[in-house]
Image (cartoon, rainbow, N blue to C red; front, side, top):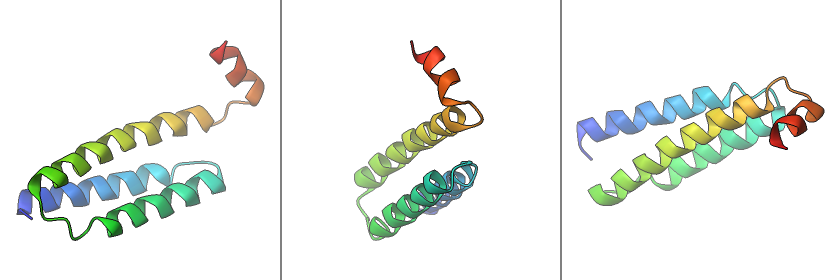
Length: 86
């Protein structure tokens, strides 16, 4: 793995953990943290550059999902959320 790629992966890992720690719900927070750690451990031995790049893109997409979900679950009541969905 190239230095550029390993630093990029480490940065993504830290960013995902940081964003996940902002969930107000304990259940969301612990699930996200556990899932992120498991996924990175599972793929730590990948050496194929194409696969690594795919995993990096997937991680970037997941960061966006985490940020959206965090905003969706923060502070609004269920009634307020239903108003925005309809």
